[in-house]
Length: 395
Image 1 (cartoon, helix red, strand yellow):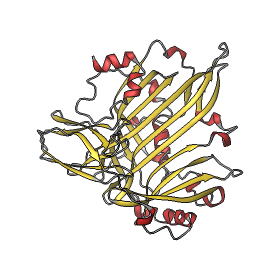
Image 2 (cartoon, helix red, strand yellow):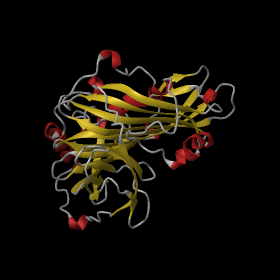
Image 3 (cartoon, helix red, strand yellow):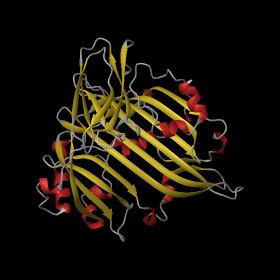
Image 4 (cartoon, one colour):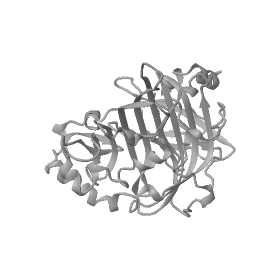
């Protein structure tokens, strides 16, 4: 199957900002409600959404954690431009304080998963980006559109399938020969980060109460609904990976709407190699940081994962070098559209297997590549970290 857009299309670009502070609003979901087309704003608040020319006037909904939901009516011949979002201003005095222990709330959240998350398979089109930086400079950047077959939330992501539809790759020849290790990131890790399907320790029915502590921190708004902000930390002497972060839980449905967390470096000793899938002879690596963000959106009245961000930081030293180099990897996965009717699995010969390293695939790179396809704009700091990449995209 194919999810590439119609040949005739209209490109809408915009930037989201906080009306009080003027700062960019990243990770917001932007959806055209009549067609189901969706995207996410990047770290600068910028987004791009393509609509087929035959569409009528648009109704765009914007949802960001901690902000009031906003709808924008737009004619096909209009520009979207800058859009201001208002903070929710919910305070603890204005809400009913959580009356049960946070651990008990998590138990209820797990029991409600069959009700809250899609129990049927879906097809989707999705945009994926992966980048590696060395000492703040872009070494390689790969981008692609994938066709996706998602299994129901009664199964794990191991049975999900992806098909590479279109991709491109940028490599800076000055730095590429210095890459002598590879991080376990890539597309497969984005699917593994669906914490509802693949329960990490802090959501494992048999582990979370014993190995993690939870506390109620606040209430914010998302999509017009009040959201509990629940903080979690792994107990100091517990087993498993030392995750810590925040769960955003819908107060009405008890559904997880988003999760942001990272690994506690102090508790990770001895487990760093789990992230490195390839290391050159004599190369040493030191784990520094791993940060994750996962978001869920409504599809046919239930939730499904529509955005993942994964960032890791390492120090790497070759045997012949005196000093360590700083490496950073970035991966982002954004669903452009879900399909819930006439869903098909991907033919076995077309499946992009989990064993492939995405950034190793041979692909071209040009600035007009995504014409007609929804994509995530490159963050300005990432763009500015490579003069060659900036020249290719802007000039």
